[in-house]
Length: 134
Image (cartoon, rainbow, N blue to C red; front, top):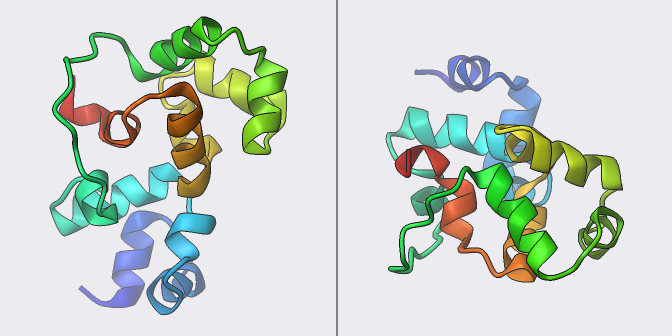
């Protein structure tokens, strides 16, 4: 598969794909989770594995990702506004993440998902690899 075909399959421009290949931090700083998941699927791996996230054996979380994020935010007594400010996004983005099953994938780049995982004390792999839990 050519780079152009790969980019088209992922749904990004050839220039965006070249940026990801040429700049080590591009995928961490600018690429949203939905694109990372598509790249990982084409490569036949999980987003966690592709990004070098180590999975930790933890009790299985029996919640949908978006509902679990909301539950953890509420447990920590954080408002949507406070959490948004902590990770540098508007409250509307946090609301989208909490209300939509796929809201996280289209809303945040990888670095922000890492911040979210740390603040809410959620395993990063849980946020990245939802399809492996369902």
